[in-house]
Length: 625
Image (tube, rainbow, N blue to C red; front, side, top):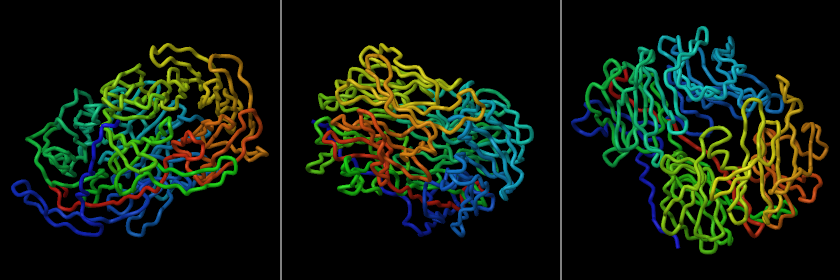
């Protein structure tokens, strides 16, 4: 019996599309008159939430049809490519987070080299006309990841986060010689910087960080760029999100859920320290995701539609869709993800949250497939990467974070009690993300997962006992990564790995796919299928862009299902006979993200849908001029 909680999403709190909202400021807080205005609506996947160009016309981002760095023209709705790398078939590289220079003539951005290493990033600068590209930090320094937050007002430095063998660091990078000044070392197990901003004089960095892993609530700190301890600028028993420094540097703006409402608050600042108490500027405004100040206005985005768990009926033998994909709920009501079928096939459970806030703690929903009734269960996890419904029907295994404990937990659906089975270090290869792809034995007593090693690229397949944490290594191999899946009877483990023609080469040859099986108790690998040169595979089983996204068995154990991205945004599902043979294409009409097969073998669930958003501006904020 589920604990039932009927949860209503908060009211939108933002004006109807296209409307202009005058005033609205609580009396006694500000004499200014604010106007909120929607200026754009479209595909939310483009925007990374960075500050627009100084004149407010362009938003930096990525054209995902090619992976090029691009600018969205808010006046014409035109996508302007800044780089020209070619199609996905020609070049798998892509751009990521980007910011405009103070004069609007250049962009700083992260660039991923797909041909080198799954974690090969570098930091670049380029003119908005596509000319004068310079590399500030090359991928040869083994930069695992880079996120660009801000560009100093004098144009001399960038604010970024760097992930490499030294850990996670918030740093400034010289736009002249690429030298790095570490501002903050981040413990990625317990800290996470979401928004960060340089003060207009370049002397301080403001950033928000998680104070409670269970609620994902944040506070705001300010730290001197040249050293010194951070200062708690905004500390509150709730969620405070940095919006940024006011252009004149006299205050910080932040978005908070204090006083039983989501609103905009202002904190006066002097020499990097608070100069008073926070004052409310605007109340009852929901789903604000800050972008920044430009042209005297503050820009923010709102997600109006997000990805959803979908279900469909699929004939795996013929590849024919018997019923079309259907979202588990109305997409406008919030987002859903991480679907899992009950062992008896009568229910589907999934996580449900607010639109546009993927990382906030979710509510667990369970839908009865016969009646369609959905029941909501309080879910005491900060985040979750995987749900596994145990055979007793009353227990979920949750790979995620409970309190400050990352790892595998047992969640009692009736009592709501949580038992942490074992903890895991966060990060590449060892953390909850790795365990999220684990295969569990039918009795949920054993799990099998892949532990990646960064340098040199290699991995291990680990067998681990759930109750005790006792583990052993089953397979060691070279290559970027792999995925495993256990047959329904628990007797055969399949390993689908991405291999490299020459692991020692500086420039890697195209990825190939090797599929093998083994006894989960240990033993020799048995080859099922290998394609040495994906682009020349005669049977059409092309190499996926990265490791296949899904590897699972059909409930009758006749087939292994393998799915991933193939070509420009095309997701393909293949089946491979468990006895061996050639992979056969089933369908390219379904998403393979979070793909799960119903115990009956015909219904499937997956994550899919359109992402839509809007960009709004706020005019008349204090200190905006």
